[in-house]
Every structure is written in C-alpha cells, then in structure tokens.
Length: 189
Image (cartoon, rainbow, N blue to C red; front, side):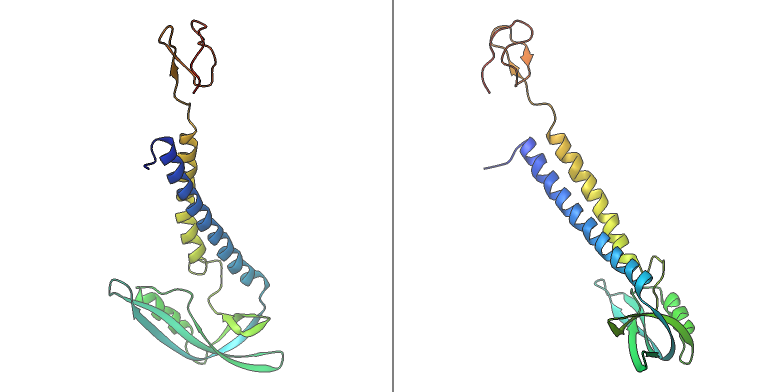
C-alpha cells in the first residue's frame, strides 16, 4: 500500500525530525563532554618524551596526518608516561608539523588529566574548533534536518481538503456539517 499526500509528508518529516534531533542530542552530549573536560579536569606540567607524525589514508586514498606525543608527568606522587594523539586528523601536513615542532621532546607543557584515571590526558584541549569539531559537525548537520522535518510536519497539517456541497456545488470545509453558503447538510467524511 503506497503512502500518498499528507501521509508521505508526515513520514518523511518525522524521519527528518528524528534524525535531526538524534544528531543534535549527539552534538550536545559530545560538546558537553568536551566542555566538562576543559572546566573540571586538573592541569599538570608534563615533559614531552617523544613526538611523532602519524599518517593514514582516508577513504579517497589521500594522506591524513596527526600527532602522537608521549608525556612524562607526576600526579599524586605517581609518575606517568602516557602517549596521546591529536583530537583530529587533517590533510594539512604543515599544521601537524607545526604542532609537532611546538611539542618537541624535552619541552614542557600544561596538559589536562582525568582525575579518575590520570592516564587519560588531553594536550590540545581548548576553546578551539579542533577540540569541538565533532559537536560542531553534528550540530551543523542536525539543525537543518530538524528544521526541514518540522517544516514538513507542519505542512502536512495544512487545511484539510474541502467537500463539495451536494445542493449548490460550492466547496466547504470537511469539518462542517452544513454548507455555509446554502445551509444544506454536507455528507459525512
């Protein structure tokens, strides 16, 4: 059985709205997690012991680059040597090379660590697009899906089709019992 007219609008609108809301919820959740890391994780001074370029191929066969950096630091009297990778991969080799130069072995940097698990660290945390890239992408995709879905659902609620008056032939709203022009009873719909 094929879905026609308003039923199709409702179905497509509902799917778009649902997908959009799921994406927006994912954007909120991941954005809130990143913000929580920034605001609640303590910082510690850490020395870089290793830094290296990582590279892989994307689905189109192009190279993407990232940074893997190992830090040596002390938390609550315990020494940690923890590797960390950059929060995103990019095709911009120069940008990653600049990051690796800044995090050369022997340099000292402030890093954030998870108080529940000091091996869980972030060295590139900040109010930057790179750190908030996932929530940004989810939000940019989710918002139009939600708006389109809501618009389609609203469009499906438009005025219902009228009924023709059997007496005068003029159109009347389907919810009316009597024709507003001639007063004749209208057929039930």
